[in-house]
Every structure is written in structure tokens, then in C-alpha cells.
Image (cartoon, rainbow, N blue to C red):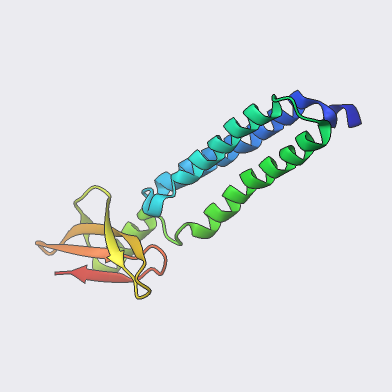
Length: 154
């Protein structure tokens, strides 16, 4: 078992599996949230970690440095996943549309849109913009995916 864990190719394959899994998870979930607030960047971060891993693992360094590097890269990849799950909103775009449809009795008439919205703490956050028809009138709503607050835009 010790020989397998000390094998450089095994470590590279393990890093490849972890980073690809994190990238695929981040990419597919970012699409559910309409890439709000740059969620797609997390899939790119883990791929950058993979490239760095490949370069550094094949460079001429001693065994202790390679082991330390291996664990640092694994922790960075997993750290991307943890931070992603912390940063993602509570509501996906489809959940937002369904909540507004149920609450306002709307027929949705637009493609997914994202607007910018300023919060109290002066940080810029993106929100969903949803347009629909209700009793012949067109109404526009903004939906905060972090808090679930719905505002009608007039």
C-alpha cells in the first residue's frame, strides 16, 4: 500500500480526479444559478490548480517537497469546493421563477436575465430579473437569490 501512495503517477491521477470533479460540480451548479456573482470562476480555479500540480509534480524536487505539494494541492482543490458552496445563493433561477409565478400568478415571458443591485454594505451583488404577464399587463420583478426577497420594478 505504501508503494501505491508514494507513486507519482497515482498522486497525479488522484489530483486529476479531484480537480475534474470539483470543476464539473462547480460548472454545472453555476449554470443553475445563471452564473450569478461569478460562480463559474470556481471551475476555472480548480483547473488552474491541476495545471500547477502537473508542472510542479514533474519538476525535480525531493520526496518531502512533493508530498507537501501534493497535500497542499489537494486541500486547495477541496477548498475551492467548500468556498463555492459557501458563496452560492439559496435559490436557483428556476426556483425564483417558480416562487414568483406562484405568488404573482405570472406567465413568464423572458429569458434569464441578471441585473446589478447594491446592498446596504455598498457591495455589488447580482439579482435575477424576471418579466411576466399578469392579467394582460407586463410586470417586472427582481429576485434576490440570497434572501428570497421579491420586488416589483415599476
